[in-house]
Image (cartoon, rainbow, N blue to C red):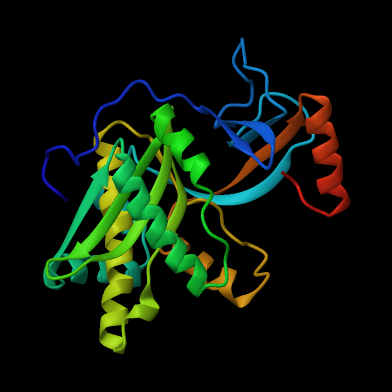
Amino acid sequence: MSPGGPNTLARRLDRSPLIRFRRRGIEVAELYFEDEPPEGLPRVDLLRIVNVLEPSSDGPWRRHDTLVVDLTTDEDELLRQMSKGTRYEIRRALDRDGLASEAFDPPTAETLADFAGYYDEFAGSKGLGPIFRPRLEAMADSGMLVLSRVSRDDGGPLAWHAYARSGGRALLLYSAALFRDYESGEDRNMAGRANRYLHWDDMLRFKDTGCASYDLGGIDVAQRDPATTRIAAFKKGFGGRLAPTYERSTARSVKGRAVQALLRLRGVEY
């Protein structure tokens, strides 16, 4: 784990689970982990409630599946719950690869830009769209955003992670690793170990700062395609329990209702 200092996770108490940003001409608010918006919610066009494990109210919830690791257990138990292969990769990364990890809590604007640039390069290699930076910036302003990265002593970043953290939960939002940048299989394997090592180091950091759970950010249990099936297998290697997670969107203005209706005609949920 990286030493203390400005890049060590701070024991912050001012993490608001509510963020606001503007997208495609509408004002959006997102509430994380809680299913009831706070009193005095500012006027917005759409309210999204996301990543609620146990909703306390009925409603048109959309269900997804995720893996949640209990961080209240000790380190030996956390490792024991992992697959044999994942434990081996983490230990080899610790013992042989000369890796160093850092966490940024809160990230500076420069660090956020570094992460977003790396992620966009990764997304482009996967045929995905670029990251939506206003959401990240709003999350950073709220105190929720935590970034981490792992590097080799003699090179640049091997992987980046981005998390939403509030109320004792740490939720993986994005993970990026540019495996295709490495020509040799040995280097690509090392980059894979680095990504697993970063997950482990992040778990320990969050555990140390009072988080009770580490959410791996969703999992494809239906094996819809080879890519999501591989990602699911990777995440299952860290153990944890399979749990449902819920979200819903509510229009709060005429403009919001119009946008929501249009998106639903296209088969899209905002």
